[in-house]
Structures are given as structure tokens and as C-alpha cells.
Image: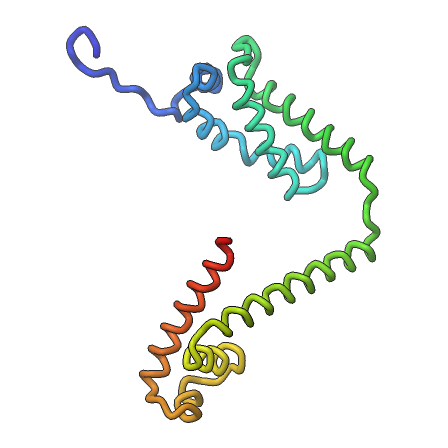
Length: 191
């Protein structure tokens, strides 16, 4: 409250300077971090991508940089320009990444393709087993509708003809069967 009894309005974080945001962060108010991330995420990812030559990994390293800033906010010296400090931390993280890469043997392109293919086959096999397990738990009617439509690709009309169900019954039954399938799938993945 001010002397006149008027509540002071705290200005939005967008109007804070970088130094003010860091002081707030150092005092335990972490809402300023969101504004820092908003301001610097895109340029920081670009900077890191240039150093390590990997834009996907650069996103991870940018997050690591922001985490370090959060952890060390109390130690930030307001005499140092924030952007300089930020990019210094990011550069050190990028250097660590490059050192780690030198210690890890790179896969040849053939090995990488084989590894990727093997992983893809493994995921496909797991998915097929999951679908089979879920279908086995479902009622015969739900299973039949899902198989005819989603696995065999029959039209609603063809399913109606093959099952003897009315077209509307096929559509509503299929909708409910898909909902039940999704519920089973989510319960399996929640474990």
C-alpha cells in the first residue's frame, strides 16, 4: 500500500530488465525465469546449434543452461551483463558436449541405419503385441468391428453388409469400441 492507501501495482515481468529478473530470481521468485526463457530461448538454441552442429541437441543444452541459471541465480553479479553471463554458461555446456562426443565413438552411417531399423522393428513388434493384447480383452463384437474397419479397411457399408448390422449401429458401435480400446491402451501404458 502507498501512503495514499492506493495499492501499488507491480509491473509485469516483460518490463523488467534482465538484471531485475535475475535479482528477483535470486530472491526466490522464480516467475522471472519464464520471462528470461521467453527472451533468450530462440537465440540461445541458435547459438548452441552453431557450436555443436545439432539443432535437436541444442534445445536440450539450452534447457540445461536455463536450469543452471536458475540454480545459480543467487550468485549472479549485477555488475556483469546478463547476456554475457548467459552465453558464457551456454558456451561451457556446449564445450562439455563436444568433449563428451569425442569420448564416445560415432556410429558409422551403416551402423546407425541398422541400429535405427532394429529399434523401429522392436517398437513395431511391441505395438503389435499391445494391440493384440487389447483386442483379446475386448468383447467379440467390439473386436470384430475394429478389425473390419481399422485393420482390414472396410467401409461402414461393407461392415454393415458383412455383419448384418444397421449402418447407424455400425458407426455408433465402432465409436464406442474405439473409446474402449483407447481406455485399455491408456491403462496398459499407465503401468
